Amino acid sequence: MLFANLLIEFWTLQAQVKYYSSSEFILQFTFYIEKVSSALSICTLLYFSLQTVVYRVNR
Image 1 (cartoon, rainbow, N blue to C red):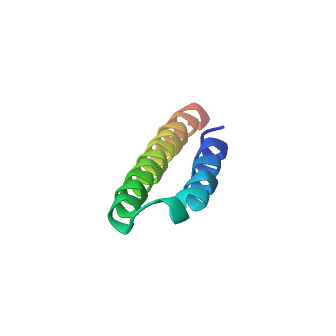
Image 2 (spheres, rainbow, N blue to C red; image 1 turned 135 degrees about the vertical axis):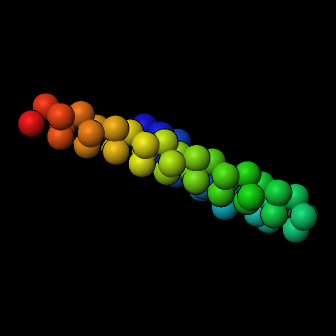
């Protein structure tokens, strides 16, 4: 769901490129990059916590 939202935002961002001045586009792009990196860090955190739980259960 999260990745679908990010994809949709990316496509709307692509569509908006021609309407933005370059500085505004760069601001939007950095905002998008921040969102992606935070989503990735959340996913990584969840993955490692799940790994820990699975490891403890299997022991």
